[in-house]
Length: 283
Image (cartoon, rainbow, N blue to C red):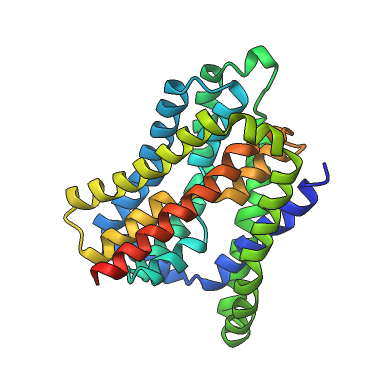
């Protein structure tokens, strides 16, 4: 229970910070540039959960880890993906718009996907159930409300919002690192005991998700900047959201389900930092 009091304010803060960077026009980019937005959303909302389900089955993960792997795949990345897109000299406007769209779309898709996946994980034998209604309410409270509040603050007090975002952007990452560290310390033995199969599964998931971004960019005939952003957006997931759902007493109430998100957070940063470096070398 102690960790939930860390993850809830961290997630709410990250979502509020995301809202401070958004404008209402960010949600309209789909009308002006449908191909890159469509490619990104297909990768995030459709392809990644399918890949997660397939890999979790292939690696014969336990029900708790199976749920956790699919769960992190259903949580597209937050504002951190925008920073990575900027560092890779990608299309930052596209990144912001994708982050905005996916954050709201997953309020609907995440409960649907998890509800359909749960029976195949073997969770029922362990009496693990998904309270869909409570999951929806929690996501609205911890994601929709902070984002909407951030958008409203930016619209009402633009200069103040810019200054506030400059401060929060420096504290968000350390808070996320703190959250991951606390979970690692609490579940170190479980993580180390399963790092072989679980770590391999998640590493492959990150690499395949980035590869999916490359493939979708090629199919959609996107530009180089758009491709970089699509690869980053599909590869980067919102670990804080996944951890909040896993550990919340209102949803799964099981820290073990959060472990895949912890490992994913580590591996995605390693691979995406390498990708950003590669992009700069090519430049």
